[in-house]
Structure formats: C-alpha cells, structure tokens
Image 1 (cartoon, rainbow over the protein chains, first blue to last red):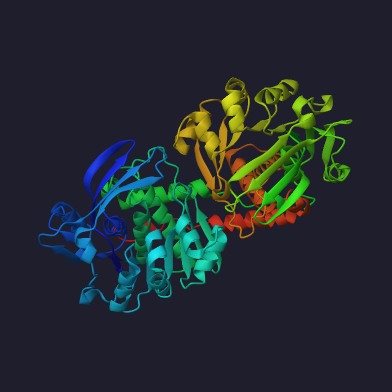
Image 2: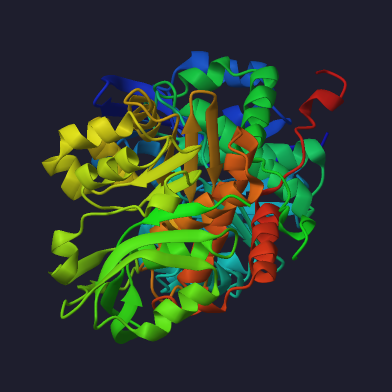
Length: 312
Length: 312
C-alpha cells in the first residue's frame, strides 16, 4: 500500500471545556492526522518536539506504523504548547496561550528515502514551509494542504504560490470567505478553484463538509453526536482520515474523494467524543467501518418518484 | 390523491437585500407553503386578507388547485404587512416593520367539508390558534406544525399542548435550542421528541436540515447556490414541499419522510433564487424532479470498502 507523508505540529495542549479540563495532553495537527491516517496506511511523520514530549506517545505512533524518522527531538528544547477554552456551544473557542518552543525554528527536512511518497498532507504551518516540503519531494500523486486565517492575512503571496502546487485545499467556511473575498460559499469555492487546486473541501464543523471540484459538489452532514466532549483536532483528524483513505484506495477519482470525505467525517466524529487523542487511540478499523456505514444510512434517500404517476 | 390543509398568513412583504428591493410583494407562510404544496397535491388554504390583496395572486393559486374557500377577504381591511432587510451574509435579517392588519383578529375557521383533510400544515401562528384548528377537524393522518421564538417565550404552555397533538415539529436550530434548553442539537432533538411529536425537523438554513425520530437521524445538506437572492419564505416553502410530498406519496413511513425532506430542500432552494414568490410561480414538477435528483447525486457515496482487503 502507498504511504502517506504528514508534515505538521506535535504539541502539548491544555484544554478547557464546560465538561472538564486536561493539562499538557498530547496534540498537534501532525499527531491527530497521523493517528487517523495510520489506521489506513503506513504514515511518515515530519515534525519537531522537545525532550519533554512523552516517549509513550511516540511508541504508540510507532506501534501503529507511523515512521518517526522525520520527527526531530531537540535536546533541551520545549515542545509547542497551546491552551484553549471552549464555550458552551462547543464551537467558539478562545486561545489562552501559544508557546512555540522548538516549533519556532521548525524547518521541515524530508528524509531522503521518503522523497517519493505518493500521498501528502501539509498540515497548517507557514505556507513557505509547506512549499519547501514540496520542493524536497518528487511530484506526489496527491497533495492536501490546510491553512488558517493568520496565513491568509499575513502570507497571502506564498499561500497563492502553494495553491498552484496542491491538489486539494482544506479550509473552514470563514477561511473560504476570507481567502476568496466572497460571502457566498458556493462562489467562494469556485474562486478558490480558480487559484489552483483541483478540489476544495470546506469544513463547517457541526454542519458537515463539502467537496467542490470543477465537476460539481458533494456534501455531507456531520454525524449527530449527543456527547461532543472536545472539538480540538477534529479538522486535522478529518484530513488524516481523508489522505489515509486515498492511500488505502490508491485512487484519486471523484468517487474515491467522496469516500475519503466520508472517512474523514467518520473519524473526526470519533475524535471529538473524548478529550485530546483518547478516542482516536482506541479507534479500530471495524469501528471506523461501522461509523462510515452509519453516516451512509443517515444520508440515504430513495430516488424521486415524481415521474411515476399519470399526469407526469 | 389526498388533500393538504394549510393554515397560515397571506401577506404583503417589503424586502431589502444587498441585491435589490421589492415593495409589497405577495408573501406570507400560507402563500409560500401553498404554492409549494400545490405542485404535488390539492391544497385547501385557510387565512385572511384585506381587500388590498392582489386578486391576481388569488387567481394564480386557484389555477394551481388551491381551494380558497378558507381565505376570508375582509372588506375595508388591510392585509398583513412585513418589512425586512437582509445583510450581506443573506442569513441574518432585521425586521423593519410588522403591521398585522386583518391578521390581528385572525381566528381560523375550517370549512365543514374540509374537516377530514388527511395532511395538515399549521404554519407559524399563535399556538392556541393552531390547537383550535385541530379541534375543528377529524384526527388527520399527519400534522406538521411550525413555530417561532416569540411563542416559545410567550406561549410555552399552549405550545406544549400543541406538541402533544402533532406528528412533526419544524424548527430552526436556534428555536430547537430555546425550546429544549439544550445547546447540543442532537440532545435538543431528543428532548423535543419527549414533548410529544414523533418527528422533529431542524432547519439549518444554508447548512441543510435534519429529521430526527426515535429510530434515528436523517440529514441533508442544502443545495449549494451561487445566486441566493431572497431567503424570505424558504422555511415555509420547505414545509409546503414536505407536506405536499407526503400527500403525493400518501405515505408517512420513515422512507416517505426522507423523500419529503428532500422535496422540501429542493423546492426551498428554488424559492430563494428570486425575490418573493417569483421563482416558485415558475417552478414545474419536471424542474422539481431534476433538483431532487441533483440533490441525490450530490449526497451519494459508495459503500465503505474497508472490509474488502486482507488484514480486515
């Protein structure tokens, strides 16, 4: 099976929600995406941590088939730390602190033997660094990139260069509007496609996600969950599920992308049901299969019968 | 084919959006729902207007099979008028004025020969009046009711009585949270089911709609539209499409309800593409069929293949 290359943060998160609090729990886009993707394909992870990062999580990743040769452990360095608080709606959040630590000097180096990885996920880091990853590898079969409002404002030119070199951009609805300058999400997606990528996925949190290409739209609602415990990492988990599924299928057709979006939705819905990466660690392929099929059952409806009566 | 009874307002709306303005255009929940439902089944409309209401619209309704015997035309009375302004996001709106006119004294009288109508839609009016409609008719096969924040705050007791007598409650996400006292929409829907109705439909505007029953969830995204011109009446059009489709199918199974939700979504997506009822007036059954099938194509994805490889 083809491998997945993931470049992103490994972090220690402090999270407060109306339902509880965790301190210095393992997180970061690279971790969430790596845990999700490694259910489906061999993963190659690139990132940096301090020597304060729990060895136990690195062992867990290795046991799941995540190759950690690209993870630099900086002696005497401090891992990236993030603190955030969620409000009662579990949607709005406030960042309490960000300590970049070793991530401040992060300059992704792709190991020589990883330079022809076919499926690549560039998690949300500075767009110039995302470009430098693509400069170091042979053209992959499929590249997914994430970004955020900060880079859309501050590094627009580099972001536009990146958009010309990726296959799929992952953004949330606010980022899609900000990047395109369009309030209407349908128009925003078309505008983004005009900037380079063949696909754009717009994440809408509890409202689901859409996949837009020149051929048209695909849209999925999110799984309805009574027990949203911690939304941290849901977007990265979604991305990891998507890229992992593309590698599992070894297919980048529209149909494969729809299946990958469903896997992303399913695995993200598991992620938010416990704090940090707890739920992801326990997730099996069988549970993922069942959640995917629940999602399909939940969105299936019969063909339109209106052409089947006299008078049509 | 069974008939549909619709009780709701007939109004003259003044609408401002970033894309234009219309003055005293025909609107009101009864009109929107009636136009949508009459594509699918014979409609019996109950409401009140002044003699300032355009005769042309009444003739159009009659031509489409809407029986107007339940519509009182008050001599010398003034029709209900509403004015609203939409902001750039086409989602948030401000009510500029409300002039109840003849609607202030509206007391729905169901004509004798309509008292065994099988499919009933009680549009958003005071819950006591919705109850009085049910008191006047033989128990229908299926009753859908709409409500709003104003009645949830002001007439909660009567609303709770109503909930024990209907099959399906239509609310938007904010109303679901307000009525249930639950922030989580999944829990909110369960709480509402505990108040009486067998089904609750939660409308989420541009994010689609969900149908929740004790058996589980069904969810549909909205049609992605680049040309949202005027959202006025979308929810009532959705309701009219739903109840019309249930009558067309003459079926209230879960599968029929899913199809009805898809028809509601399809017809509402047409409604918002022009000011007032313009787009609905031009809508044919063929166009509705095509939009339904577009929605199905846009939400279909292949079964989960994860159980099909060695290692499963």
